[in-house]
Image 1 (tube, rainbow, N blue to C red):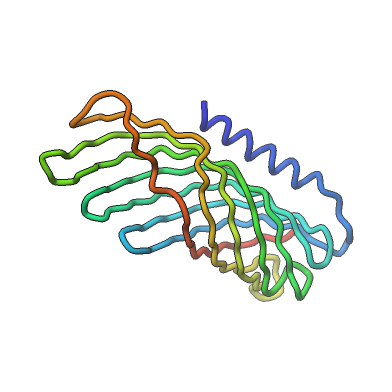
Image 2 (tube, rainbow, N blue to C red):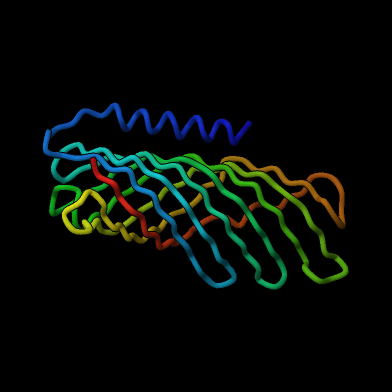
Length: 201
């Protein structure tokens, strides 16, 4: 049910972005398809996403984004693997105009995650479990949009800094104990490097 609500939120966000009026007829829109990754102490993650970006004028655009993140965390004592899906709405500023060159932006959205964990790993007290969490994600980004030749395709590298703010969490043991547990997902502050292909129209 939560995954269905996430998809519905993504569609609603995309419709909202499309509904914004154009300020300039010279502005263009773009479909952006991308992948990303993060490597930090004890953590690795891969991301995939799709965006519909809609120009409001020469220097400002709004976007709707749907995507997913697969991550692993292991500090030797606690290990967690998770699958996160969600949708964002955001804004980008292009100082040079025309949805080209350097940009910076921000976004917010609703995300849900399914995760498994191992606590007290490798000890007599080891427990295992699984959980589901809901979160509001805030995301800041800097990047660029660089056209490949004179065609409609652009290369869009970017760097993201953000945080998942938990709004709900459930957890149950699957080994070493029974019933519900108090573990919470390790999702929180993150950095992510991504690259996408933008198709302007």
